[in-house]
Amino acid sequence: YKVFLEITFEESKRRARIRDSEATLSKYDEKYLPAQRRYLLNYPPPRFADIVIDNSDWTHPLIKMRNSGGE
Image 1: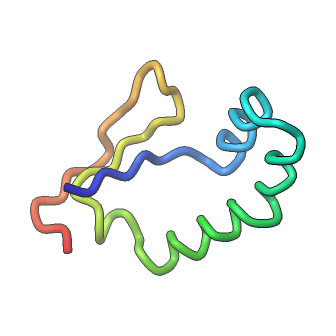
Image 2: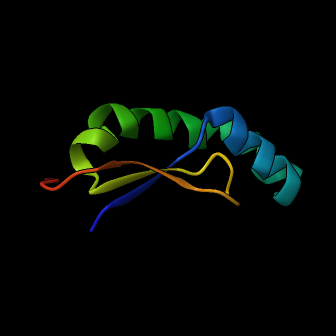
Image 3: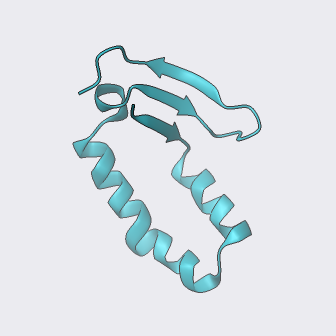
């Protein structure tokens, strides 16, 4: 079962600023977010995930899509 938790890149960085060190934070623009963009281009969640959950507000996740097939 493949679950994709969806948040914006901006929200991802905002959360990182709260929990991560400066050394780790600097890797977001250099490594983590570019890798995530490539992954999303190659494996779009609506096509490959069984469920997509909008996790922008982690206290109120929202199911956006359920896929009966997946790949």
